[in-house]
Image (cartoon, rainbow, N blue to C red):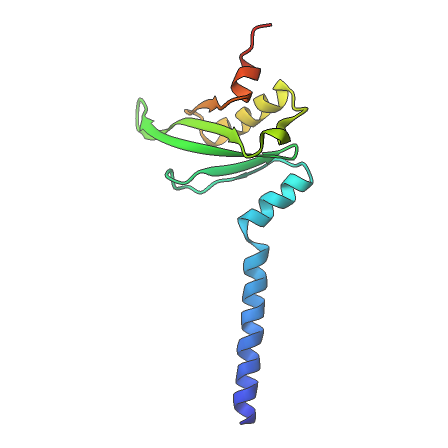
Length: 127
């Protein structure tokens, strides 16, 4: 009976350690921590069919990747970016959006980035 209780405690201990590690490595926790500290973080899965998330200056953006043919291969050719909450982009300047584009082009150099409203209007307004 005592050995059964000890075995149960060992399994409980392993379960708690596994759950803690899984919680600490959770991507949504990473993006939320980066958002709170107003850092840049790009969370992307190598699968093209899955969207990616990035955060910058406290705003979270979702990017949709689209596959297409390039000169030598099939690659991500278009990315559509939109903020999760439009109120979170208040106060951001054009340089902030250009920085985000630069970081995305480091990972996807052939992709054309398309911003959704209201960022698209802000970036391409006539002076």
